[in-house]
Image (cartoon, rainbow, N blue to C red):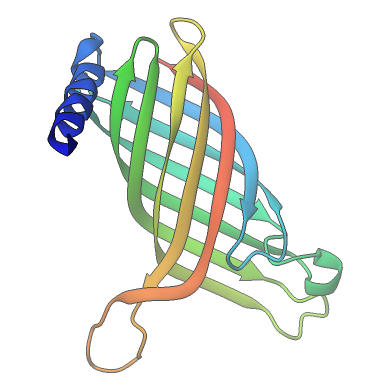
Length: 185
């Protein structure tokens, strides 16, 4: 019985991936949303831009920029504080008519900044970061659509500053949910 279910699920997945005639597309996305969980003090608004390319099959690539002001909390206490990321992502998508369901993951720069209100304790930190997530990209017309996305971000680095080069996941992480307007060209 498990074998039959596996065969049906595999056939359905192959049908979804290969059933719709897909074309390569380049798209730009402007989006807004919220950063939450992990090291955020509470849900914080975020804005971003993405530029991507999806091939006629299932593979694609995207470069995304996110900026979250007041990431660590109220700027009256901490001063100006934010987290920004610039990351390149590989995408796997399943085209269904005018919609693409996708999974995405990548790496790049993760920058955090805290400017203390009294200029006594300022922190600017650049880390290597990774992200993984997924979402839906659906077109309302030939060139304009909507996009929804959920991602997990985490810093990566050398846990011990010594002569050895070790890479490990850091302790800084958070989730992000966004939605926005996509333009295909």
